[in-house]
Length: 139
Image 1 (cartoon, one colour):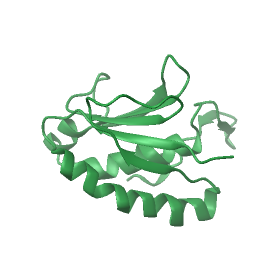
Image 2 (cartoon, one colour):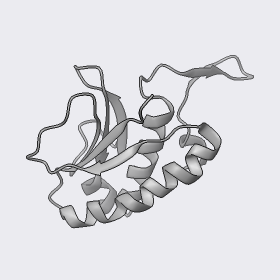
Image 3 (cartoon, helix red, strand yellow):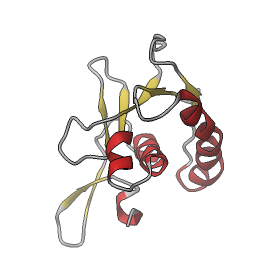
Image 4 (cartoon, one colour):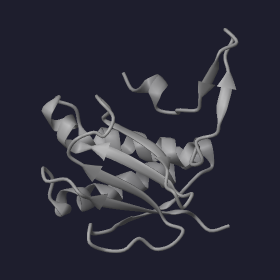
């Protein structure tokens, strides 16, 4: 089975493409060395310009300025074509003193762990929890 290709696209006005492209080697290392060791999951990251077309079957993470859900720094969902889509709101990250690279890493790892957003676990309290692998350690 081939690795998923995840295209990272900068649609933000507060970041330059070069800034976004520059973090991809570190994220690739994080996934391919650290995350894969525990989760047995990997991917191929690539930068995709905002005017370039997404190759069929590729997943995507888009960085933009402002959230389309109040207060969200990022989240992942499914496109209408059924492929994973991550959203990172770099403008809000910057305004709130957070790091857009941390949010990007967070959403990337969570998207890899649960790309179809259908994994959950039942806790000791018998509540159902979504598999959000970064939430427990984000603070």
